[in-house]
Length: 269
Image (cartoon, rainbow, N blue to C red; front, side, top):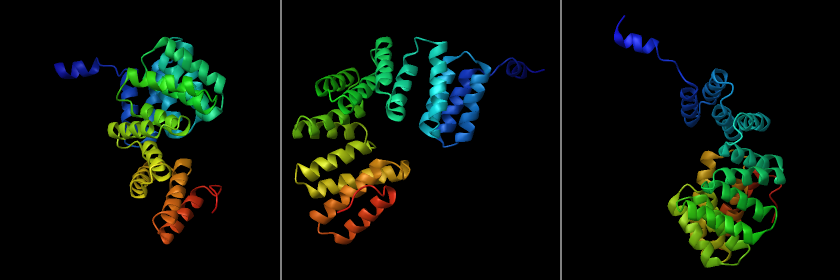
């Protein structure tokens, strides 16, 4: 037997190898292959918290299997009670999908206690404080913390910009944050949409608003399914812009029709 063959026979595929394989398959859109790889990682190491966390994240983000994802995050935390990322993921799921605000906050607070340097967790907690609890001051503090920890984290700038725009009436500050978010991540569709509404409603810049709406819609059309409420809203506000500021009646009608096609409850005018 050759030395190379002997080395190959002595090599055992580890759970982390299957996690890496699952990540790669997920990135190329092979959901079946990705899930099979994550399942294999769990079966090889049924007490390995990391395997459950990655499988749970995949079920949540790619498959929409909320209960399956929740069970995996629960298992990850059960096997490793100090696993900050699993608490952060479960908190996000509880907030976005289950409406469990108190449970989400408890998970996010614990994630921060275990790992105080994760900017994304502060950003999610800020969203809850702002959107669900109406606590503008503490939400702003969380966004500021997120940006101080990671000045390149585009989502935090977008969230802070929205708060400045809607609650603090700080148009210049909001625009600066949206610009930074888009500069850091040109695929930040929400920041493009938010900047478009700012240009549309506060800055009197219809051509700039149209360009931002166009880019946001293009990104959402490529990546989001038709159930995404952002996409319907973007078509709807673009229809208003075309009707009221650009004298494009036909384009406005087309956008309004597309918005209603995506979300029949989007509204009428």
